[in-house]
Amino acid sequence: METVVWGIVILLFIVAFVGIVFPVIPSVLFIFAGFLAYGFFVSFEPFNWFFWVVQGMFTLLLFGADYAANIIGIKKYGGSKAAVWGSTIGLLVGPFVIPFLGILIGPFIGAVAAELIVHRKGLTESAKIGFGSVVGFISGAVAKTIIQAAMVIYFLIMVL
Image (cartoon, rainbow, N blue to C red):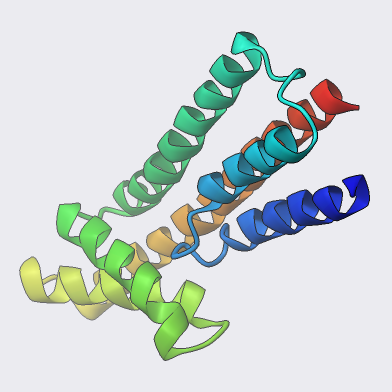
């Protein structure tokens, strides 16, 4: 039975890491689902209050890193709030319109379109801001990977 539970927990963690590049998958929920699956089917004993506080702090850090990376990437290249919104919409829509590459092309097109339409910036400047949105997305993905790995490693330390 414990092997099946570990299989479920590992599968939930894998889905969480897939959510790093497919933002429609709520990564942190799958990580917590892994914790809860272990707790319900094996034991909640390793999960004291300190465990939940640390995981909660990692979760806040995860959300903050994702948000900050996008904004910093766009602002560094001269983008506006409209570019941030355009990039976010492109990030959500892109993978569905253009499988695989849409995760990078979507934020780029969204940021460029927002700057062209809302602020009437030139194509060159808008493209530079679009590039900033891709840099922000990649930076956020790296940060989220590190934070999620820390969450899983801390879980493993507590249960093994």
